[in-house]
Amino acid sequence: MADHNALPLIILTEKFASLPGIGMKSAQRLAYHVMSMQVSEVEEFAEALISAKKNVKCCSVCQNLTEKKVCPICSDTDRIQSIICVVESPKDVTAFERTREYNGVYHVLHGLLSPMDGITPDKLRMKELLARISKGGVEEIIMATNPTVEGDATALYVANLLKPLGVKVSRLAFGLPVGGMLEYADEVTLFKALENRNDM
Image (cartoon, rainbow, N blue to C red; front, side, top):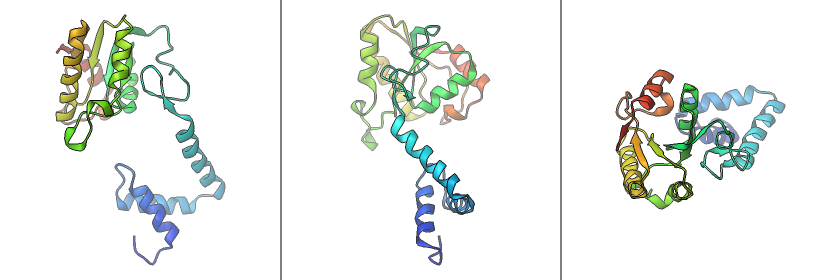
């Protein structure tokens, strides 16, 4: 942003640009839009950010984001608790829930294995997954990580970890492009991927 602009506006633009998927031009447009808003609207926006950061936490069971101790999916007695769909992020839970076809529960890893980036198994929510399985009653784990090098490596690692425990581990039969992201997939593609999952 040109240095003829006010410093607070430059700082605001840089903050927007630090968000994923927001380039400098988009950040500049957002910053100028904020300047056109009423002060009360900006305060509400800021309060929403602070409230979300302070009040949203990880579900004690599945690690999905929630404002309660246990999220609505885990506490739903109509869900099949014996099938756990393992995903990379909370965005993927939202993608599957849009299909309205999956009735099991989830486990969110909050990342994928990537030793080059320093993301090792202890940085992910693996021990929480193992704790759930050790309680018994889990019949199948569906590995629903993205079809990328990191996603495949994570799925294989979890499968090897769980096979000695006698739990069936399956992988989505991706009708998705390699390197694609679950959050951008349409509902039919996700449903077909779930329906045609394979054993690992």
